[in-house]
Length: 412
Image (tube, rainbow, N blue to C red; front, side, top):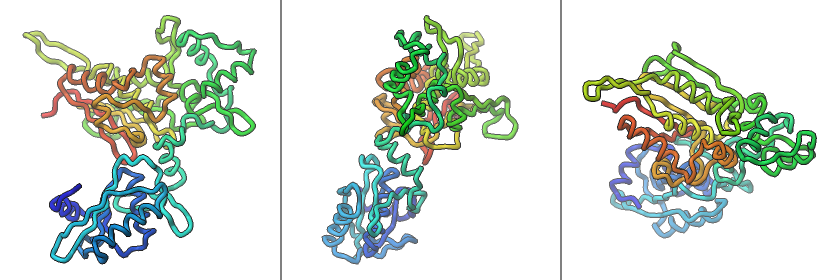
């Protein structure tokens, strides 16, 4: 619960993606709209009795009436209903401000607000709230784990869209399991349906998003966002001149030998190869000897790439995973916010047990790309970078992306 100083600071900083000013005589649908939009982003605060330009007009209702009005709207004009944190503060003599606090981790997304007789999903965009598009609403359902996009069928695909050499390699050489013969189409199809690599789609059967990403012959034909754009720049910022660049396409998984050695590389290994050949090395003196080592530890690089592949929002079309190397750092940008319930703090502590794309995670774990118990970021990125050059990786969540940044040397 905030104090008076914090309240004044919020007013002084104007409206933003987490703060809304409102009169307490607005239409109930208007207040419900702002509440739902904030809840659908990352929570926030609504200040009743503050004008849009930041001047304090104060509540027009008594403290008790204002609280009752807010609680009724939160119960009757929102789906699902909520009970917000409510406080009332006297900011000037005779002028009270009502404070509605909305938690960042509210579990009911997407929240819908009443608009007349309809129920509408709103989202926050900067300091304004607007109706969500169908794609944005779909991502909210996905973030709430009510819809798993990775096991949606991909239109105009079927068993023929999967690379059977890779599928057989997975079952026989990775899982050490038998697989129905190719001629036994019905049994093979049933196995892949039970594994969610194929999905029933109306009267037919389609490859799932995960099936196509993992084992597709040409995943980008139907999922153009399935890939990595990797670029090495000579300086400290993006520029037209590049040292190396590659659009990495194809299935995520490799083909491996019976002993587990990679014989044909997938997108993950090819991305790591790009980084290895462009990361360069650093030199330092150790007891009079000049020592050279790679700029980044490979386990940290691989974990950053794997995390981007596993956690990215594949429902967000039109953008690849971005890998960028600069003179002083390496960055991986994954489209989409972190899944519901996942925070940067939890990732650093190693207490994350869920992924946006659970099937991708489980199959990549079979290939030993993913560490058990959700400790990959803590062990393979944070601790590896500390041992390597005593730097702290940056884990940065933006409005529609998540970035991991590794530094070549401690910053001055």
